[in-house]
Image 1 (cartoon, one colour):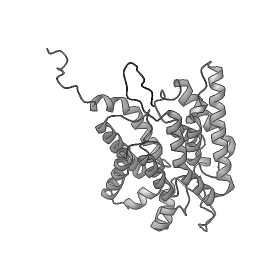
Image 2: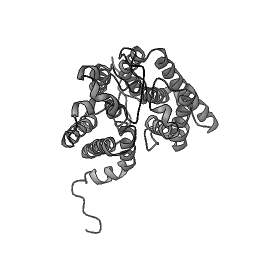
Image 3: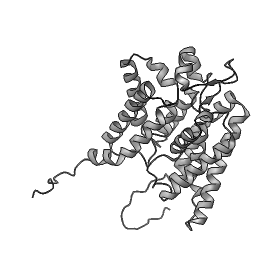
Image 4: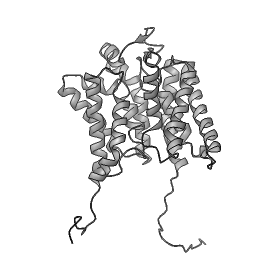
Amino acid sequence: MSKLFVSSSPHLRATSSTRRIMLDVIISLLPASAASVVFFGWRALMLIGVCVFTCVFTEYICRIVMKRSQTIGDLSAAVTGLILALNLPSTLNPLIAIFGSVAAIVVVKQMFGGIGMNFVNPAMAARIILMVSFPTAMTNWVNTQFAGVDAVSSATPMAAEAGTYSYMELLFGNHGGSMGETCAVALILGGIYLVARRVISPVIPVVYIGTTAVLSFVLGQNPVQQVLSGGLLLGAVFMATDYTTSPITKWGKVVYAVGCGVMTVLIRTYAELPEGVSFSILLMNILTPLIESITTPKPFGASKEGKK
C-alpha cells in the first residue's frame, strides 16, 4: 500500500537533478571522446584525463579555500574539463591544458559563485583565454593518423582544410582540427541523445546551425563545409545550450541562436581569428540578460508601467 504524503506547495517534483543532467552530458560526449582517441591517439586520452582531473581537483580545493560546501559530486567540473579537452588540439602541452582548466574553474566559475552563477560557459571562456595567451600552440591542428598528412598549422582549419576533404571525410572526422570537433557524426549522436533525454531543447542548435548555413550560402560559401568544419557542431550542441548562460524564453532562444550564427559566419569570413564559434557564443552569453528582458512575455492583464 502506497503512503500518502501531505506537504505544502509546490506539489510537482522533477526527477532530474544537476548530477543526473551532467551525467547525461558526459554520456552524450562519449562518442566524440572515443572518436578523438581513435583519430588522434593516446595524446587525446591523456589531455582528456588531464583536463577532467584538473577541473575536479581545482574545484575541490576552491570550495575548501572559500569555505563552501563541496560540489564536485554534481559532476559539473568533470563536464567542464571534458568539454575543454575536446576543444583543444591534440598537440597541446599538458601544462597549458592545466592552466586552462584552472582558469575555467577558478576565474570563470567559482569566483562568480559556482554552478549557476557564471555569466559565460567556463570551458568556452577557458578556450578563448588559451587562444589569446598561446595562439601558436592552440592553432597547431594536426590531421588524424588516418588522413595521410603530418600536420597543419594555419590561421583557420576551415580555410586550410575544408576544401580539400570530401563531405564523408568531414562527416566522419578524417581531417584535422581540435580533438572533439572533427567527427560530426559523433557530435550529432550526442546531440540527439541530449534532446531525447530532454536535457536540451533542439531550438538553439537547430537555429544556430541553420543560420550559419543560410548566411554562408548568401555570402557565396559552401554551407555544408561551413557546418561540418571547425567547432560549430560542438559549440552549438554542448556550449551554446548551457542552462546558465543561454535564454530561457522561447523567442529568446531563437534570437540568441540567430545572433550566434550571424556572428560566427561574420567572424569566420572577415575577422583574423582562428574560429568564430567561441567568440560568438561568448558575445551572446553577455547579451543573454538583455535578450531575456526583451522576450519575456508580459502577464495577462498587466498594465504598462505608469498607467492604471
